[in-house]
Amino acid sequence: MNSRLAAGLAGVALPLALLMLYNYQLFGNPLTSGYGGLDPSSELGVPWQEGLIGLTIGTGKGLLLYSPVVLLGLAGVALRWRQQWREALLAVLMLAVHLAFYSRLNYWHGDGSWGPRYMVFVVPFVLLPAAGLLAVLAAHRHRLAIGLTGAVVVVSFCIQLLPVLVNYNTYIALSDQYARLFFPSASPILHHTRIAGERIQEWLLHYIPPRDTVVLREGFSYSEGDRAANDMLPRWTYGAAQMQVYPTNPEAPVSGRLVVGDHRPWPLERAQFQLLLNGQPLEGVERTDLTGQNIMWELRFQLSPEQARSGALLTLQSDTWNPTRDTQDNPRNEDLGLLIETIEIEQNGAALAVREALPIPSTRPGRRDLWLWYYDSPYHHLVDTWWWYVMVSGLPVGMVVLLLLLIGGPGLAMMIIGLRGVTHAERTTAATPAAPERVAALRLEQEQSGNVS
Image (cartoon, rainbow, N blue to C red; front, side):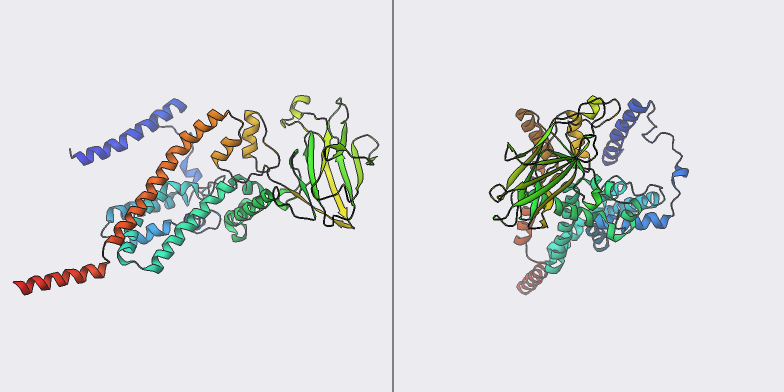
């Protein structure tokens, strides 16, 4: 048997055997997958036009929009078909077979993911012919073509960066599936860009808080309001909820009104709470029982110009209760204080805008709680990268360093090797004469050799 053929068969047999062993261990049968006994014919009911358009150019899941670098591979197929026909044939067949099957699949979009997840496997194979395109560009050095190629790569990188900045579940939880898949205005690419910008603004509030604002700092849970409309309230507090006041005029007093609810169930005792200013009890707070049952309270207060200086820290301090611990069927495992319904702080009759500084809420202890803190869309984070989670997870320093080295070390090494390869290719190309120059040099050499003879 041909040695190359034998090596190829071995390369197929080994992963196939591992896959069958995996299926046997999990499902008791090497030929049974995680999809069980699904009847393929019952799962292929979508008009192929819908799936084909959605998987290729659809603004919700289109491969060409989520991975524009695929265009470089297709260009390589067109330009270098004869020179690299094996790679071109493999790329075309992989793309055609996947599109033919998944275009009919009822759940062709594979929602719950970033982009067309069923087409991810195709991308590396379609990119193989891009090597031919790069060879053509290196030979002819057409600046416009090189610039366009670089732009496609940069755009593709930025699109794939979006779900790293914002967890892809965030927009899924805030949007309608049909609109997300088919309406350009509801494209996840657009809205993840918007959400990432909002997160950056929330992060900057920690360091560059503008005037005319009340910034929610620490000690708050996520908003219970309409998240699609960015409602700040209502939201639960923890034991000490901090908000900072940045008035417009440092020479004018500030007035405030809070409406809070004590919704802990019977037989728990009613909350004990107070309002602090810069760590000390705030005097002159008017408390009004809005229901007569010690459940809803209105707190009114005044801050003098001296008290309301920029960055005055208000703290709503209360004892806490835990829904999971104190009730039998509530899965919310948080130590909660009060539910803030209203925050109204004014100066000279003008309301100060209520903003939240990222992250809210703060990092939570406990393995499951910390996992939910990563995953739930209401929890705002600046980035959704694994290394950031590891660093804020509360693990021992030694474990954090070990994880960063084991996971990040190989990735960093591959990036360095790749960059060195690109640099070496550029140097080699620069040292090689351009195609027309090589042809002219060869002709001159032939003419000189003919004259000598």
